[in-house]
Length: 102
Image (cartoon, rainbow, N blue to C red; front, side, top):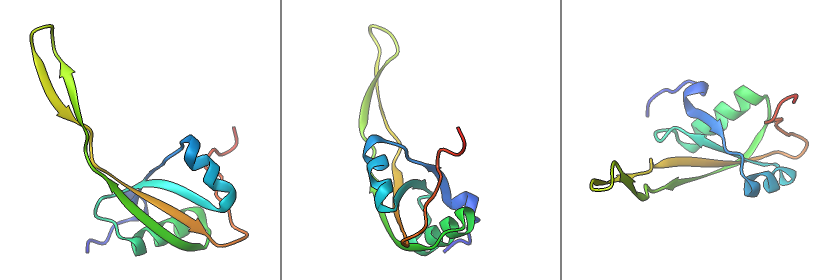
């Protein structure tokens, strides 16, 4: 296990319609480093956002194949990147202001 810094563990918050519906339940979704485990993710969220974490669930999305056209005659195949996501559930009474002061 590599000793990762909190900024290395948490890449970015994932803001989608489904994830914003989870925020009233105290659940937030982040893209995290592939090498990070649940304990490191919990410590990083608690340190960065000053909250208490109840649970961490992780998932890895596999790469999907995509077709890339360079010109009318050349076709190439590519793939999206594999991503590790973490759904973090906070203790009652805590919340994270992902959008900041807009």
